[in-house]
Length: 451
Image 1 (cartoon, rainbow, N blue to C red):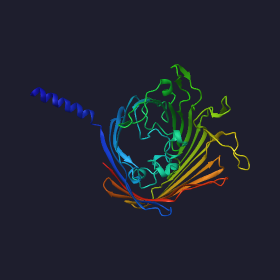
Image 2: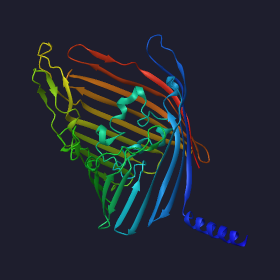
Image 3: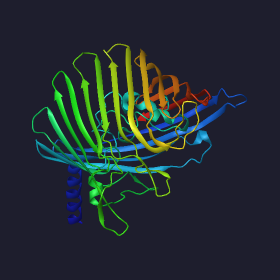
Image 4: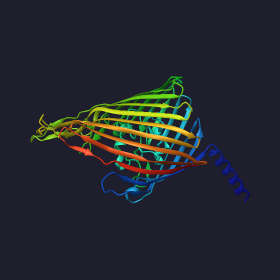
């Protein structure tokens, strides 16, 4: 019995030491759309139902020399109000890090919080937790009617955002070097693909050449009292290799871009104001129309290439009751990798299609806020998008207006409520065709609880 007591005490001391630095926390989010409808004639006003929920537990442990984070979450979004089946997904992610010397740090795992991303204003934090609580038009969850709004902000690597997006939800090993105080160099090597998810699994192993072709590199330089400069590269597979039908390794045949080059600057020199400017260039690869032996026009490559993205953000917050945010993103140039029809000056279709240009896109959002009291804030989130289509020589314009409020309901409890009015887009082109989407509206509200 005495031996058992001694062993138990030793185990308790070891366990206590191991977790002494641990910080446990969590979040519960519930969101709903109370009413929804459109201006379509004879359309019904519907009860939205439970729109989204998420429960999240996290443990952060360690110190400056080493540690990590573990996140467990369950949730679903955007199903009930459309009448779909309400299902629950369980996900988990985590990482461990080690900093044996001051000049070197390594980390392995998944960090889905975007800690390495360069966007300081225009990214997730523009509306922050409001998007999770459905108090704001979501540029995060992917509402079906508002997919046009996802373009500039959700995924910098795929969608054209002008700021380095970080590692996202991909398993990786990253190495950081700190040669001098203001400079941080980060190398990211992918080792998997996606979160651990009971529905989809994790991993998707592939040949090492293809895997390493998706590497990231980021150089970050902090200029004291001035701002932060970022220069980044995100591989997109064009440097990799693949196997032919016989299983032999062959050089990539230019069916994927080498990657994206990012450059951005975040200004912090002016008290109460911050601004950022970002550029991205998607390195072009071969995309052209060719003809087979029968004269049929084909497309040699099937992915987008060669676009330029420009992004800007501005934030005013001098500690007073009024704050203001602005963000804009534009994508210019590039090829779609798909054939489009061509027309003569009279609008008659010609027999010679060509590889189409990517549509020029411009998105802008503003977000003023007035703090009525410390516990009641009012927001007016609004914006528009413009898409120019080469094929139609026409414009598609979408817009939204979304006032909402934030209320500190109790210790750790936040309440959000708002009204959304939006139109996905109208288009008129030189051939008389048009898209005339209905004006839609929604009354959402939600709670966020932190512990």
